[in-house]
Amino acid sequence: MENISIIVAFTAGMLSFFSPCVFPLIPAYVSHLTGSTVQYNKIHVGKGMLIIRSIWFILGFSLVFVAMGASTSMIGQLFAGYRELIEKIGGFFIIVFGLQMARILNIRVLMFEKHWDHGNIQKKGQLSSFLLGLAFGSGWSPCVGFALSSILLLASSSETVHNGMLLLFIYSLGLGIPFLLISLLITYSLSVVKNINRWLPVLSLVNGWILIGMGLLLFTGQLQKLSAWLAQFTF
Image (cartoon, rainbow, N blue to C red; front, side, top):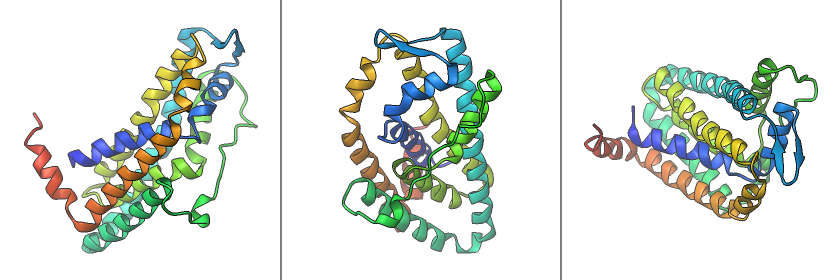
């Protein structure tokens, strides 16, 4: 597996979490998952229940993302003879997504929005948390969609279906681990959300430039060379 792809997938997952589409709504997600309330500037909920339901929520959206990775990888395998062309097309679109996130471009057609729908899901424990994760993974919003779409394009150019699935699993970890940590922190104080909110525009720019760099590497065919160079530092 390409080392640089794994690093970028995990980073993209983390930056997707710390995006204006997701991070400010974490208290609302936690409240809906656990049925808890906000009092005295913190979420009041048992730590054990929070951890269990958060894990089921993460498993839900991870399943959706990994399934997407498998699908795009399978499509990529069907056109394996055109891998170089696929890499150039994928690299081009990743660059466009990065320029959009870095606010260099403003293409309105890319700013479509689809929110996750949880209105019909009742609070019944782990199953409802898993279903909420499925709904979250199936929902799209502009700033998360760019990063996720870029990793899917990267998965489409991977050598095997398993590699593509692994990329999306790593992306899910990048999104899920911060979710679990922040969920625990806001049971002590919501101030952490307010403090991090100030850095969200900067993180969005960072995410954009990372995608631009990845797109350039993929488009120019330098991604494999860089991964080979990094492999010498891998134990």
